[in-house]
Length: 468
Image 1 (cartoon, rainbow, N blue to C red):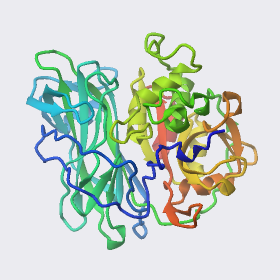
Image 2 (cartoon, one colour):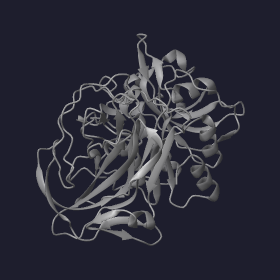
Image 3 (cartoon, one colour):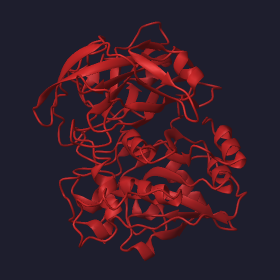
Image 4 (tube, rainbow, N blue to C red):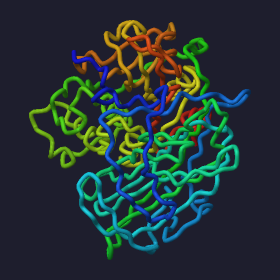
């Protein structure tokens, strides 16, 4: 089996989002002007990320705020957008606020777009935060795309610039979906999909923020992207090599499709070196199909018919971040899942296995991000600096049942991992790598996907972990 050490993203495991030291950050922050669309600078082949977070004494470590209702949209500031009501509210074009030229840094093509904007009210986070990750759910028909930005206020009263958190289209015919590297004001930076305070030990925190959506369409058309949900998870996770144990409470296993990323090794290497690095889209595809959604035959017509499980290739292509050069952009995976009919998706952090059990009990599987040495997870047979897998249940003894895409075949995907080992590699923020160097862990990052009309139990479980 090909080692999944780079399965988060290769080369050199670029998806180490919570590294222990900041890389030197260059210029590249966009202007605060709404329609400004500077081309992103090229990223180096490997990147460091923000330091692990420090927890505010006595504070709650995670705050989620998502805008999705008609009342939410009406509470923001609109320039050219309108609120769609009905069974599912959304934000769409009304009349253009103006036009702007965008030069796609990945194709060199310059195009003119009509745009409209919506800016959220200021949200004061319950958690003065060291990090924030935005995510969004949007329909982007051909000829449209969206940009999501974040601007915040620091604990000392200073303000961040508007940071681009993603330029997104579900397709790849108009623009190449992309993150924007090297955004910094020398106090905070954005690393692919994560806003981070540069020096958490200084005590500086993000205390509030706004999000801004810019909707784009081809001039002279009536096309519109429709945004169904946008928000962010802000967090201040304590530095820790180990985490408190949570006793088992739930024994249940969900029936989730099983797909191996490794059966796709060598396929479509232009999308992050092929299947060896497809843990995130493979996990996403498993959960999308658990909820009864999947690509149509027409959607998959581009895939080589000799390839098994073409939907995994499809997920890799349509989660691919052309700046990051990989499929592991967290909000891009959530946006891909929500592009299917009547689906919601967010990126957040959970605090314990008790939270995961609550979701499993309600029938909601959880995609988790973790890094570990081979010796730290019995039965895995590999080590990784970043890997996504899907928790589908718990045994009677409380051990974790996971669909691990880093398996040699679909049949081998279902694994049982020791509870205490798994809990620690997922929730910690610091660890030792194979050379004994202190590096970082993800601190409980996960993706949650669920239908627009969840059951009462599912709605309560999501609310219990801070997602509405």
